[in-house]
Length: 213
Image (spheres, one colour):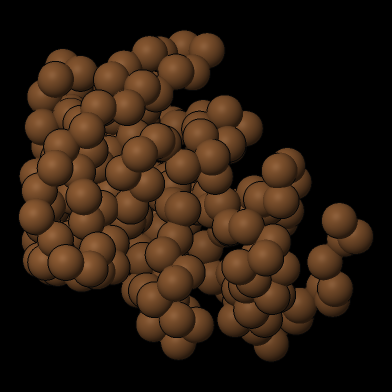
């Protein structure tokens, strides 16, 4: 049976659970994974880089793990900011169930929900994502537009994208669409991008090309 895609709502592949470690300087947990979800065999190196070098979450407010998979980012956010409210969003129902299970095992509170289950009035103080670039450029742009436009005025989004999967062109598109975007790191082929709430493109034009690798 084919594996299908990690962004399928209902993975067609049979379940075969697996356990993987997530070890960071400030936390160490073991996470349950499964077939049909992203990075089943090990925490993705881009995700780990995001947790190592990305911004620390604020102590309070609503925080978003977009495309949460089985929850390494959501669990880390909840551990680092126990008084914040962490939302873990994914279309993959198996991934959401695993994320909720891993949060419970780590003794943290995470709201693992489908996109439509996030109340429309919630605005995020922070958003972290290793976005699903393999869904295609147009669906990715639509996804990011939807959630970046829900940042609070002082909010910040942290994205990690591999250079070979279009990180630099994505950064240019974000800036051109009015979201101030800064590359804050580049390691192992991955770009770390920090994105601020959208501004008027007529007042804030793109600053031009990305810095060299």
